[in-house]
Figure 1 (cartoon, rainbow, N blue to C red):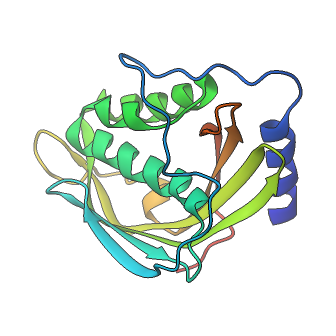
Figure 2: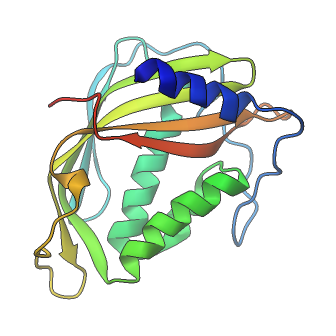
Length: 198
């Protein structure tokens, strides 16, 4: 399954022809250096970030931290800040191609339009560059949201029917493409309920 996902990533990310022009709603973002292709850093271990008063994010960085891992961690952090605050402005700082913009914004809007947000602690672990071919890359992370609950933004109470993604850890991958300007931009997202355990 992992090999199939990697092959799908190569086909989608590497693609043929010109890459889509980057699109950022309401503003033009400067090129990001967060996910450069420079040397990896040695900083490892857990990093805790309070995305909002209700949600905490713990990232377990690997020993040799590749800057490309920021593609998945920055997306996760921004999407949960947007969801927890009910404001998608946090997504504007991400480097996304048009297809990635649609996916990221649609997911956040679907929940916020139903007056839903999240509360609890998320753990990102087993971060890795799964495949890198030419100007395409797939970055994987295991996401553990079993200590997160989807709640009503108005009442603060957990909704009766919790979604599958808070029941067990799952694999999240971002597929990105490096533009001629050297910036890696997210083109698509993949999710798989298999491939990660607590």
